[in-house]
Length: 262
Ligand SMILES: NC(=O)c1ccc[n+]([C@@H]2O[C@H](COP(=O)([O-])OP(=O)(O)OC[C@H]3O[C@@H](n4cnc5c(N)ncnc54)[C@H](OP(=O)(O)O)[C@@H]3O)[C@@H](O)[C@H]2O)c1
Image 1 (spheres, rainbow, N blue to C red):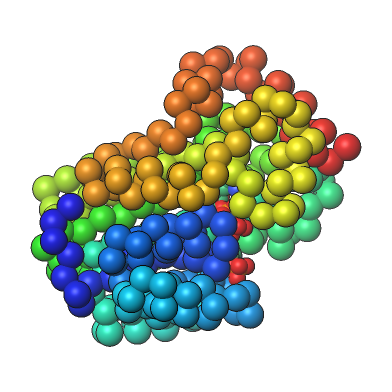
Image 2 (image 1 turned 180 degrees about the vertical axis):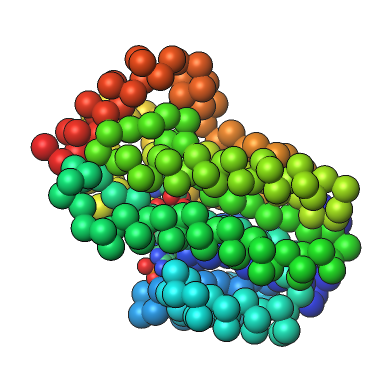
């Protein structure tokens, strides 16, 4: 990591809670200014104030629905005009467990828009800003779920496989520039109540591989600044996902996920 100037910022999407909040706190602790984004009315101003008071860095917050093209457009334009962004963390993402034929079209839309469209458009709109920095970084948050299709989640793992592929492609394209692109595929994290109760249904093994968002954030930041292309936060889950043949893992994972909705 080069010396970071006082006028440079890290931009973190989905920073009101969960892994995004952990990223913001970890960066602020490292004396890095932050720009925080989440949906309106979800505590983001409190996180922002907390960051400024506790760590003495500069921080700004933006409440918007990133899946709305006009809101995302206005937001990214404002960021590019007002701030020097040397790190973009595309963290905001959603999932969901349900029978595909019970899902509403809007459920499918939301996952694809946030996990696929927003990640791509944020990268595209913020890239000119990253390119004007002496050194810059992008981290895209995928998931261990990118390693296998899964029934009852269907759209989510497919969207995270997109994030993984997109990140590697973009990193290769930018390899002769000042910008590196990293992707992380975390395993399960107990980031919110819904997630914790879902994980509890999976028994001991799931609880054993469950990660703490603060630890994931800390590990990622170290490796982003080392320009690591792929960040593996849970080696054993990663090894299993990438080496067990799909005809074995697909039915096993689908059965495990089915328990969530049983
Ligand atoms: N939790 C896990 O087990 C797990 C495992 C692997 C990968 N991941 C990935 O890690 C990332 C973070 O997950 P998490 O569990 O920390 O998520 P989370 O606790 O549900 O937080 C999601 C964040 O995204 C924001 N967000 C959601 N929709 C948005 C929208 N339309 N516009 C702007 N912001 C929006 C939320 O804002 P509000 O607070 O305002 O709603 C929140 O800040 C996601 O990409 C997820 O897929 C999670």
